[in-house]
Image (cartoon, rainbow over all chains, first blue to last red):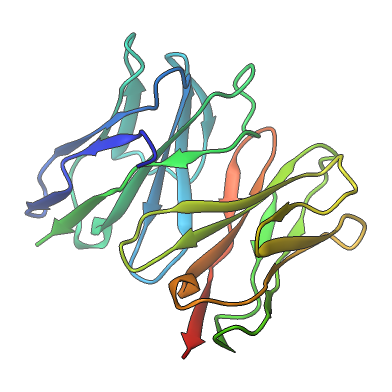
Amino acid sequence: DSGVTQTPKHLITATGQRVTLRCSPRSGDLSVYWYQQSLDQGLQFLIQYYNGEERAKGNILERFSAQQFPDLHSELNLSSLELGDSALYFCASSVDVQGAVKNIQYFGAGTRLSVL
Amino acid sequence: AQTVTQSQPEMSVQEAETVTLSCTYDTSESDYYLFWYKQPPSRQMILVIRQEAYKQQNATENRFSVNFQKAAKSFSLKISDSQLGDAAMYFCAYSGNNDMRFGAGTRLTVKP
């Protein structure tokens, strides 16, 4: 158990809908990262939050947004969903010094999103 | 932009033998970290080993070791005494100042 909790584990929805994925980082970790992994592919970095502030942005679509709350949990919002958004979405957390993306990231079990 | 390349989509090893997975990366940063993550069929991402770029000594974790060649920007993973439980996708990852990038992965099969 990595200590990172993601809910829900599975999500099935229809095109055009909006969903919210939730992540609780490990106790003490200030940074949260979101990744997308499509079938049989590597991980694509979406976005990083450090202590409530956006710190780094990767290949995140404009239809996607995220935030980190004062209790450090994070939510990834996906809207106007398309078939191609079906993927495994991972959250990871790390203790990061000053928000630098260099420390070990511990991954949650992922949320499997199926868009029908 | 930093890129990570894993040139071996699939590898196979006999149980108890040794296998080496390749990874190269491209960066202009001088301070960064490199990682190998394992993803078994459960899809959980599990950290295998980490290497800090400023350290010349290669990292080792039990049966797992790396060959870090900073000038060549190469970071290979050696698995010794392979076990059936080592079968998984292995991802090489680069972590710098701005983001973390993963290679496309190498699927390792372990034959009994």
